[in-house]
Amino acid sequence: IFDALAQQPADPLLSVIGAFRSDPRPEKIDLGVGVFRTESGDTPVFRAMKAAERRLLETQATKAYLGPEGDIGFFEALRPVLFGAADPRERVFGLQTPGGTGALRLAAELVALARPGARVFVGTPTWPNHPPILKKTGLEQVSYRHFDPETQAVCFDEVLAALETAGAGDVALLQVCCHNPTGADFARDQWKEIARILGRRGVLPLLDLAYQGLGEGLDADAAGVRIVLEQVPAALIAYSCDKNFGLYRERTGALFGVAANGEGARVAHSNVLAIARAAWSMPPDHGAAAARVILEDPALAADWRAELASMRDRIVSMRELLGTIDPAFAPLTRQHGMFSTLPLSPEQVLRLREEFAVYMPNSGRINVAGLTRANVEPFVRAVKSVM
Ligand code: LMR
Image (cartoon, rainbow, N blue to C red):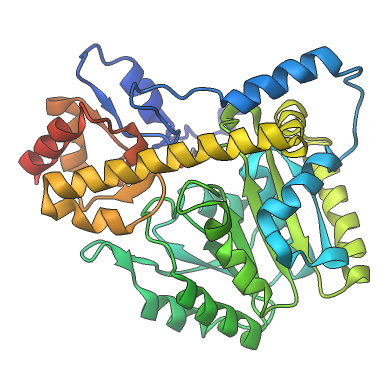
């Protein structure tokens, strides 16, 4: 039976993990997959997470099933972090998902069920997993330019022009903060303009929030969600706890939906539960349970916020250092989060890997958190010598 299958290429981003690991050169620099790293190159478990896990180990009385929505206490505890004072209350529905990827897939399945002909507007470049996730659900994708590599900034006119061609019932997939792969985010005023267009044209926002707290702060990073919700009756928000709780492999996320009214939310909720049941039945528990313990305990929550803030500060300081070492990198200081995309060709990326042991995906995306005070100068020299 499997003879009918064609060989698939390895995932270009995830294959950087293995290639880096097998490089014996001690000076090697990993700017590949998006995990936070400390100055010593580690991706530690948050202090508050360790404490929460210990507490779970001691107090968890059962691992019996929770149901397709997962840990509803986790979902409820995350709500104020996401919505702040602007929680749409009875209009909210949703559930815990296996990572932000599970939330995105579920959101796309829900749209495909509700509006099979909907088009999804996606700015490019985007997270390389966005198009395949959408493709699985059969939704048509419309792409437009989000980012200009020359100016290293958002092409805002092109974003607006594209959204003005979206019709009622179409979807706009927008990254809320720390844009992956470019770091080029919308400013608050730009979100306001986007929100007005979405509201006026009846476009459903599908907001991807995978890095809350790693850009400018927990509230500032959620501003796009809160501004958009002022102008639209309905929205979907795919939330990931991979980076801001350091839960990566635990696959912890949530899909938040906002419907026009409470009854709409109840019906939509029953649909996401049914889709989740057929896809994964129930999400993995551990990461969400531990995140809930943190969010429900004021002392642990304060420590989590403090550690998140120190991670954010480290990323910002690496961006500033890049700009100080070489003015060509100055535009990166205006970007947010872990990623920037350098104007490098795949050949230049290959030379960086072979000649300088600097690892990044072919797209030229770098994980700024992979830079340290010790490796940033050799990194800049390597980039300069292949450019
Ligand atoms: C990344 O973009 O590096 C991360 O989101 C990991 C992934 O799954 O692609």
